[in-house]
Image 1 (tube, rainbow, N blue to C red):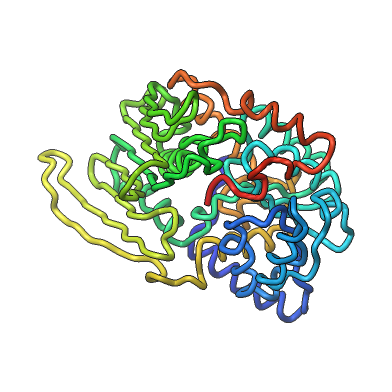
Image 2 (tube, one colour; image 1 turned 120 degrees about the vertical axis):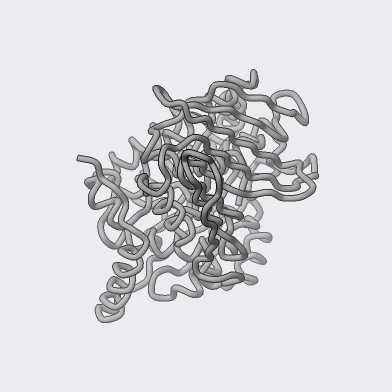
Amino acid sequence: KEVRPTTMAEQEAKAAASEQGREEAELPPLRFGVLGASWIAPMAVIEPAEYLPNHAVMAAVAARDRTRAEAYAKKHKIATVYDSYEELIASADLDCVYVPLPNSHHREWAIKAMRAGKHVLCEKPLACSVAEAEEMLAVAAECNVLLLEAFHYRFHPAARRLEELVSDSERMGEIQSVHTNFSIPVFSSSDIRYQLHLGGGACMDTGCYALNALRLVSGASLGEPRVSAATAVTSSENVDQSMRVELGWEGKEAKGVMECSIFKIVPNCFVEVVGSKCSVYLRNFVVPHVYHKIFITERDPESGRNIRSESENVNGMFDLKHSTYYYQLRAFVDAVRAGITLNSSDEDVLAVLPFHPRDSVHTMRLIEQVYDAAGLCPRDQSSAASSASSSAGDSSTSPAADEPASS
């Protein structure tokens, strides 16, 4: 039978009950190690942990430069600094590892952490190819641990509300089109997102969000999409600074468009689903805790005339405490405490998490199709040299190895 994630209301009720149960049992927080003194870790895990003291503590960090790691630890009140990634991963004092390294390093260090018995929260995209993603998930199953791709927006109530709206086939009617866009300004040519050997490119950064969101809103009614065409604007050979992708669904007339950029002066971020009876538009799906708005427009399917419009906001605006990252960290810890691993049943996984860890393979498959359709090389081939250079030790030999590829 088909297994669906629990609804937003069910998730919130379950989380509240779970929180009360944990407080009564006085469970110790899970101890996380952070690989790299990255700019994203404070927003993604360090600050959320401060609001979730019964869930998680960022207990250790390792970076390619110990002096830098010590300054980072002092600034963010992290108790322990390790000399290398290997030393951190091997520590018996840690339960989980957060991997915000460049895309080219995700596979190696996630696998090493899992083989050391650690649960892993890994930045997106999970890997540089379908083969890498499948290998990582296979290791997670072998080691009986949780490996989760950090699509933080999926954990926010706004994303859950969006999913509920577009899954209402009676209200939406037949889905006719899906359009997603995530574009931001990253103008420094030295940024790792412009580095091919680190798995860079717009589609690997903002594009993975937009493709994931497109799959989120179309999956229930249309199934998995396939890329039919892709056009890239490149900053250098094989490095896309923007991408426009056309998609379709087998046996369906619906059309899909995904746009992404890391060279856009004015940021843009939305999901739009048009049905024969209703359309839903979510502005700012990636960081809805800062600002977002959901617009719902119902129309007469015969005349096409709009008959009713409304808008709504979930959880208010500028709620930096209850950020997407807050919900993500809480759910990840809840899943670990519930014993969720890659060997758990789909029912058990989706009772705690909004998506299954194996979902990462489907998004990665679309990314591969995009680069192939655009005539650009696969990202895993570009990462081969980087992985080889790090195999003898700490991959922080890369000049930007402590910097994440995306937010």
